[in-house]
Structures are given as structure tokens and as C-alpha cells.
Image 1 (cartoon, rainbow, N blue to C red):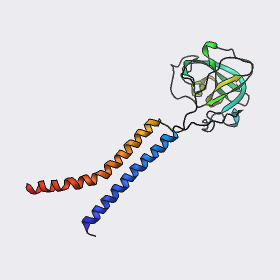
Image 2 (cartoon, one colour; image 1 turned 90 degrees about the horizontal axis):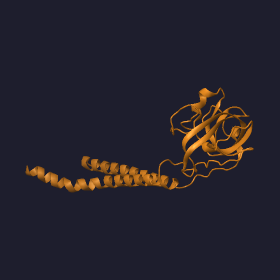
Image 3 (cartoon, one colour; image 1 turned 90 degrees about the vertical axis):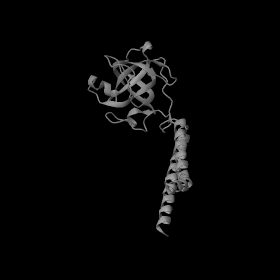
Length: 230
């Protein structure tokens, strides 16, 4: 095999490898698009909070959205403005800091601020355990939580704090309207159509790579002829 044939073979091999990589990336994005439409199944079994999470540690991924029970007494009361529930309704929420009987404290969404409830001497809370919020929904001020995040109250208590918060669906001895928690979303980040757009882009790139050698062979004779005429 002469030098020219070897170079040509290596070029064709490189083209195939690159095109195959692009096709593979498109297939990967196609799979992610399908997975993004599969709803996440959350175990609805009621379990003690301390059995799946502990104060001063990051909320385990397996604990998020689990239904938990926790008992204790409320020691602080906050207003959380501009919060959005599972139906997309925006309102101000009443949030209590619960000093738990098992040790540590956790934020609890009790209901609407407009239906404010006094703090009982002792309460058993059941509800959905949520990861802390990262984006502010309001300005920080006295008695106001810009977001549902225990890091915002570390300077207001000496107790160890749980990561995340509980959206209560029940409190012993208290009857009031509750906040509907957000629905579980797919663990795959991004949106269905976003992944499909990546599929089109990667497969288009594969087509371009495969077309280039044929295009080059087509235009090369014309270039050589023009150069010979000069």
C-alpha cells in the first residue's frame, strides 16, 4: 500500500469514527428524552424522619420526597412569601422551625400565612420531605424566609439543623388547609424537546462528517484544473 492509499484509508477511518461518535451521542440523547417522560415513583410509606436523615448532613438523594413523621415543638415562626405549590399557585406560607424530640431542628411548611396557626405545646407532624431551595423568592428580612433553606436560620438557634424541609400534610390536634407538595419529576435533567433537539444536532453533525469526503472528491478535480490553467 503506497503512502497515498494509506493516508486515504486513515482519513476514511477517522471519518467513520467521528460520525459513529456523533450517532452514539444522538442515541444517548434519544434515550434521555424517553427517560425524561417516565414519572418518578416515590415510596409513600410513612417513616420516621431520623431513620432516613440526620442533622448537619446533606439530605440523602434517597430521602427526598419521602413521607416522614417527626414530633417536637415549634420554637420559631416565619413567613415565606411567593412560594408555589404543586398546582402552580403562588402565595405566602407559614413555616415553623420544629425542635424535634430526636434531636436537631427542621423547617416545616404548616400552611398558608393568611390562615396562620398558633404554635402548640407539642405536635406530631407528617408530611413530604423536600430538598432545600436554592433560589430566593423574596428579600431577606426579620421573620421572613427568602427561600426554604435551613442555612438561613443558623444564627437564630443553637440547635443542629436538618437539611431540607417538610411540607406538612397533618399536625396532631390541628385542622387546617395544607400546601400540596410539588409533583415528582424525572431524575433526568432538562426537557423532552430539549433532548430531541440535541438528537437532531448530533445526527446532523454525523451527516456532515460523512458528506465531507464525497464533497472533497467532487471539488478536488475542479480545483486541480483551475490551478493547472494558471
